[in-house]
Length: 343
Image (tube, rainbow, N blue to C red; front, side, top):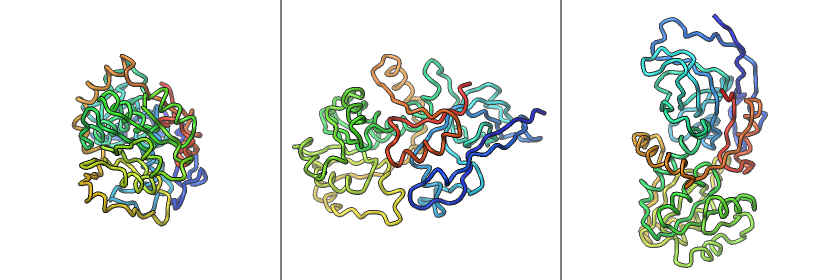
């Protein structure tokens, strides 16, 4: 039985406030590359690409919200990734299959087969895309915009955190659908990306806008039909003042709030009544039944160059903690991926 090194990223202790690299340890462990006897529903994976996502911060807290279940100090981080099957005790998977789903932040993982979400059938696109545009963030943008947002041609769309893993796609979907779309981001480089690469009609750096309400009135003199919510806090408060009658707010995330010990209040909620706004939180896993339909929509757009995707690649597990922490200060440009192995 081959025993090999298994580098891991371990959570040292529960996190409060902003996560730091020192909250995680990179350690060398070992693993035997065989399934334990009688493991019928277990799959041994070689991890290739790991997805760095803001929601991981929620799992790192002692009291996880929304009953999502947390991480245990002393054990590896858990998240979405692209992996290759080394050995399978489950009939649906065989050696060398490529899959994406929940795995651990380590070189090799033993996971219950139920944690694998999908087998990867299309390999003419970069495999790392299954952590992003063809994975959870892509499905999030698709479900949030089309299913929750119910867009109509010609509507006005605003996207916060617009250059991130999800936002960059929402803007492109909105343009393909015939909408006017504006995005906010946190640097000049990201604003340039929004306008010059992702095709946003307009974009602004929220850090340079002392008055967000005034900024939104400048870009949306007639108001906003759909606000794709990624940040919460002051941005949401300003948006509520600028929504149109019967506007929709798909609530995907609230990254400005995850690290605060005392979340910020929102003062303009009464506008939900005045303007009959529908504001709806959603979780991507409730839409995975649409994945086949999503691939049929997405793959041709990628192949024809009608949708583009920007990734920020961190090479090696040892650079995983810095990549994850960097999400919360906007260090990443595009979808943050950690490469464990290319093959």
